[in-house]
Image 1 (cartoon, helix red, strand yellow):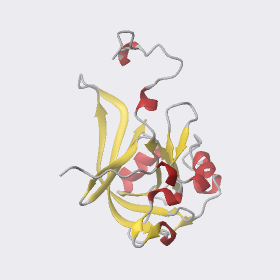
Image 2 (cartoon, one colour):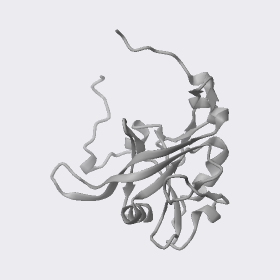
Image 3 (cartoon, helix red, strand yellow):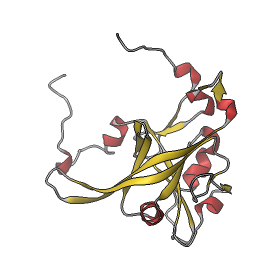
Image 4 (spheres, one colour):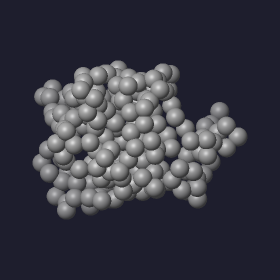
Length: 206
């Protein structure tokens, strides 16, 4: 690495026009999360800190900056759904990110259809080609290295139901690029799309 590398300690600031952390850890899958409170009021919101963490049983998780409606609802009901964000649903997903009051239904705001789920009580986005129905396993308030709690919550859930559009299966194998999933980049408005021409094969050694 060259001696003129840009180095910074995050606690002291990065000295750049835009924080590079999210751009470096990217692109990231989008945690497009539907939830509802105990009174049945729906919430739909995207989270750019999202991923899968186990496959047996399947566990996914997202992190929320601030104790937002999604976290509150999931802790109250123990359930949520994740929907795959795709190119055709990009604008709707973006609309659902608006900062609105808890009584505002983001499904209606984004022009989406809430469809009943099969295992959990939380509805999911009817237009989504892939949906995970989830039950809460852990909700964790994150801590800094010094042990001080920070205003971020990690929500983990076991996937108890999976919906897949059959057009995304070829000979029984899920085709990742077929849905044109979008991922969050690092800039203020940067997203990326997965397309078939970006695919390459690499087998594990041994």
